[in-house]
Length: 81
Image 1: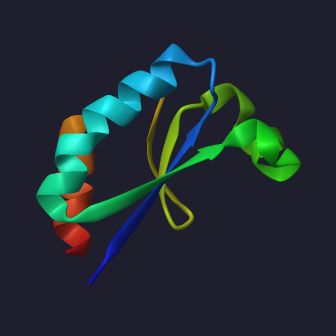
Image 2: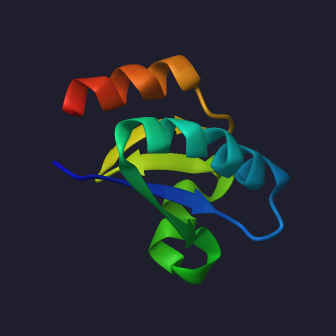
Image 3: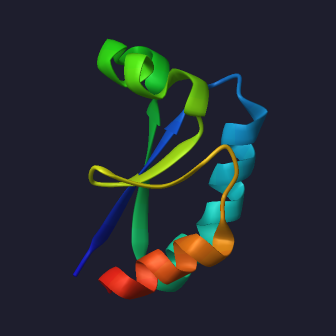
C-alpha cells in the first residue's frame, strides 16, 4: 500500500523547509511519497491552515504542524502500513 503524505508549506517559511528535511528519512523508511503544496496557492487551504503551516497531512488527517513530531509520525505511519 502506497503512503501519500502532503506537506503544506510556504516558499519563505524556514520551519517548512526544516520539516521537509526532517521528514525525508521517515518517508524513505516507510516508502511514503511526500507532495509539498504551497498553502498560499489555494485560498481554501490558506484559510484553513494559514497560521499552522507547516502541516503534515495524510489525506484529511493532520499528523503534525509547526515542527515534525518524529515519534508521532513514526507511530502513525506504522499504524497505516
